[in-house]
Length: 168
Image (cartoon, rainbow, N blue to C red; front, side, top):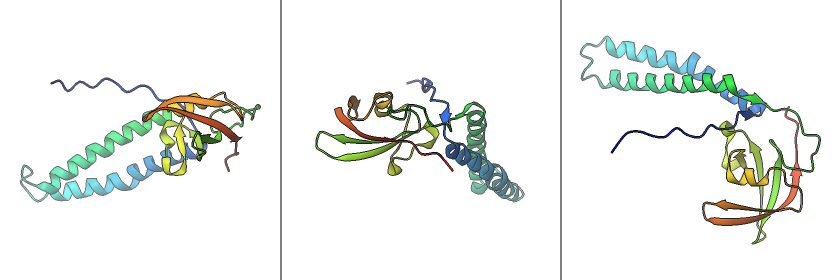
C-alpha cells in the first residue's frame, strides 16, 4: 500500500470580505498568540533535560509543526484569494454570494448562501461555490428547476427566491 495521495482539486479563489477577514484573524491568532505560547512551552520542556522521553517536548514540537503547516496554507491562500464585493447587475440569477431559497419535491424549504471554499458553514446554510448544489444553481432564475446528484442520489429543487446583500 502506498502513501501517495492524489492532489485535491483546486478550489475556487473567490471569497467574501468577511471570509478574508476571518482568514486574516486566524493567521494573526496563530502567528502572534498561539505560536509564541507553544514555542515557550517547548523551550521550557527542552530545558528539563532528556528530550527523547519528554512527552511535553514531543507534543509541543508536534503542535508547532501543525501550526506552521496551517500558517503556510493561510499565507498561500491569502495570496491568491479574490474578494467579490460587487452585487451583480442581473440580480434575478444565481451568482457568487447569492442567498438562494429552494424547495424540494417534499415541499421542504431550505436557504443556501453561496460562498467561497474557505467560508463553508452548513449550520448557517453557507455552501461552497465548488459544491455540486451551487454548481447546479449558478445561472438559474426564480422558478427554475434544478436537478443535481447529491450524496443520497438525484435531487430536484425549485428556486423560490434569490437575494443579494451588501456586506458591511
